[in-house]
Image (tube, rainbow, N blue to C red; front, top):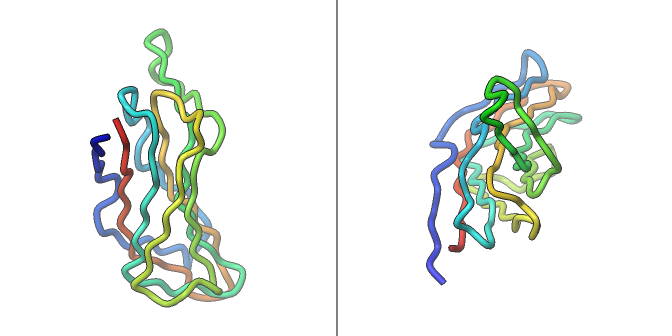
Length: 130
């Protein structure tokens, strides 16, 4: 079975030292031709204080032509977490997508501020089997 590798996040530094935040990376990534998939997150560098985390989350998305300004978001189907106990970079985190991931995907980076520096330089791909 052929696999398409979709670049979701190029190498980017996310810094949550000043506060927790959510960065939406993809709102409705079309994966209708895919039957299986895996989230691949590379941590090029990270410094996560106690209590902090950086999480890449993939959820089901169902965009609507009737209401294109509204995001219809469903269950989480994959995630990758960096926290203070994560191994040192470089690090690869893989999580297979749940079987019922639907036709469109939502991808976000959620950062929770720790007791000090909370930042990570990551890149992310989805490996989708067609």
